[in-house]
Length: 371
Image (cartoon, rainbow, N blue to C red; front, top):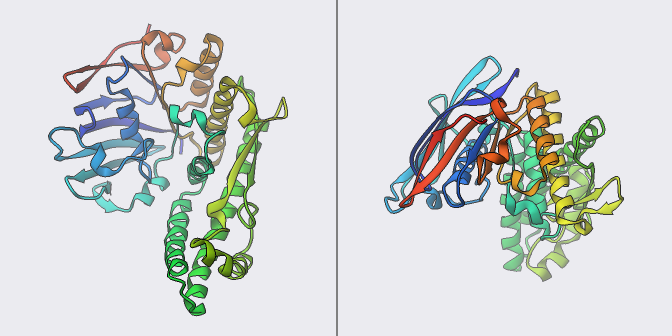
């Protein structure tokens, strides 16, 4: 791909936007306005052009504009090198989310093979000090950007694990049932572990080769027995079989890739990320997002679309300017939000600007040139 960016984005009855239409040219996109105006809703809409529940992890019914609640639609035109794709994701009232690519119904997983999207939102600021679930989710989004089939492996693993957990809770003793489910879990689990390890290796290489204003983070997979380091399917199946008695007592599967954790260390200081200051933790996250983008640019020929919500407000002027310079050097279409246009002053004509306003619960966007 010689470039990946949206040229058109339309929101219909999505969150606070009854209708919003943006015509884009591939430059970064700065959105500013007061808190609650609907800036993040635009980024959330873009995030739904990738598999999963988007950057807020909201259910389909939560995304519909109130009080109408008639459903919602997000459509976009994506340029991926010489190819152009029409993407649409929608949910009618009381119906699950549906996806169409170039006019044809498609599974969500198909989006990952066309449109790679990476995001950083304020809720992730506590990533290094919250529970492991959030870090696994971050790790799997990162891995998905490199391996589009990763989402399918995770879904298949979790489906088989839910069935196994049901047997454990029911105190079932049929070894044949367990063996069949554990074989499925082991096959998909080995793929998950291998893809995660490969993604972290790519991030490490990208960080080592980059000239960046942000600190390098050393990453490692950790967790309980059989959770972190890659293993073959046979070894995982044996581990699941050995753990049946313990798992039955707990009523759930206690080992496997679903228990993995992601550890990060501020490399220059040799300090765990969890012990770093709030500002350092944010800088480490930004560094990882940029490394992810650089690695993808090398691997597939284009950086991903970046969604950076309120990232500018937590950086001093020098770091803010450095971030914008690195985004522009990458050639990435980044969607950035902030409360005022002055937060994007060093971007100037390198970016498109949109002011977001809200009146009576209805959001509106107006294109404004950045000074």
